[in-house]
Image (cartoon, rainbow, N blue to C red):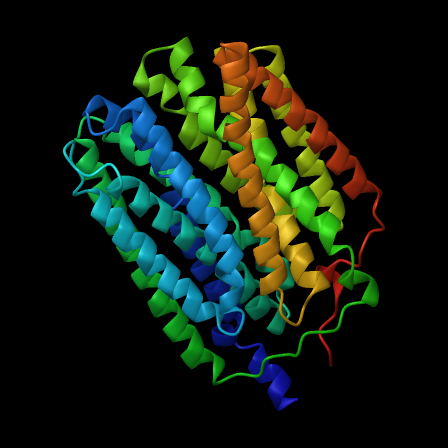
Length: 409
């Protein structure tokens, strides 16, 4: 009786919330800064003469390749994802700050090297934050809060897009400096939060995780494939939406809103799905998100008007993080003892899809001599693949929802 009453004190009830806050901050820095800060800053770097269009493509490609390498090596942190997360976040902060020193006369290899390293750290941070955060919540019988961690990605993207939108009159180098300082602050807050969590954990009872059925432990290959296709499906719109919007209207205060809108929808959609789809199986949530993402890519096949671009930003931005949330939670359910290797394989597939998307556009552009046609073909292929995987996920047998598991007496 004493143990039970102690476990329900307000102080201990706040521990899962602290885990969620740490996860949100970590993913906001990892993805908002480490992965996606370059997208809204590229037009300003072109304006300042720091980059050309060709060198900008090299920077983006280096980040994709770095992300893939980071995914391939993330399993090395299986034994201690907490330390891996901290190391990755400080790496993102250092590489982002370093970019602020790059001028027009800098080595052509320096920028891609830094962005490539940032991609490595981002993959490590995503895998480690998911592995650590979901495990911590499961140990405290608070799996239902795991979805909230992934709102951090959308918040980070929205913040990374809003900073250059509001401060676009500044030199791009100053904005990179501000991004780097933001990443430093985020890494410091995560470290302090983990230290506070470690102290609090020593003073309370942690409920053991309940075993999941054996059916949760198979089908990893198809899981990895579905997640890789989602990476292919979302990356082309995520890469080209701001540029496509700029072709429709030249006012940066208008076309510049596409990227913050993309991130805002990513954050809001995760919160809504966590609340309204809590009783659904992970597969059904994932399938629904993958199907809606297919609508966003199909829309871009039919028209590239400004309203269609905004609608696509809502549909794709509002689903790609639900896919990550549901996919990573499902991976944790299937391999509860140590999900880090499976999460790493899924991230490898996702990163491969991200590289394949822009590469397909480049290859088709050379064949069709018109980038608009190339984008349409790639969006059409993404639509078909997303719909096929959505159908497959929907037809899977529903797994027991972890949030309905009762705490042991």
